[in-house]
Image 1 (tube, rainbow, N blue to C red):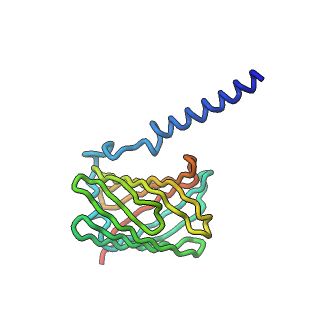
Image 2: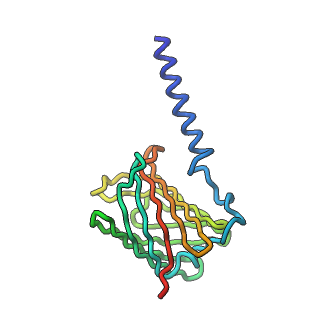
Image 3: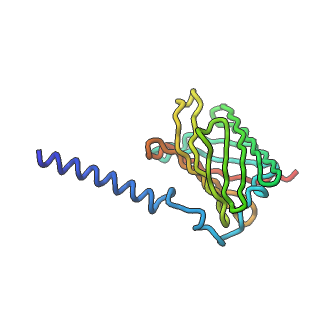
Length: 186
């Protein structure tokens, strides 16, 4: 009986240490202030405006690529209010559309809404990065699950944006996305 108690306590300690690691050392531990004054500034009104080409991959929980996609995006801004329409084409042949509605604060805070979000997203642009956190409801054919999402966008010198997102369910990473966003010259 005592050995079972030690086994359970050891398991709980390991789970707690992994959770602490994720909150202090891993991807989710980044803060927008970490990028203040580093690299070219990311301004959503400039960098998420006009026609954009997005290309990326989605990794499953084992780290293997489960899907590839190309998306056409168009951003429009009036002052601090923006709309970003997205049309994703996946290697499976599936097509997905989303329209983001953004409100950018003068301090870089970002509020986001979309039809498949549960509530609204909140984030901040600072320095060369933008972080956005939200809850996403998957389509019914994908299980209809609600996932916690952390999006990080990093602006490069040439204006390309690297997007890395993690999707979690009950705190466990179930998918990750890596993509590039590039302006299409008209």
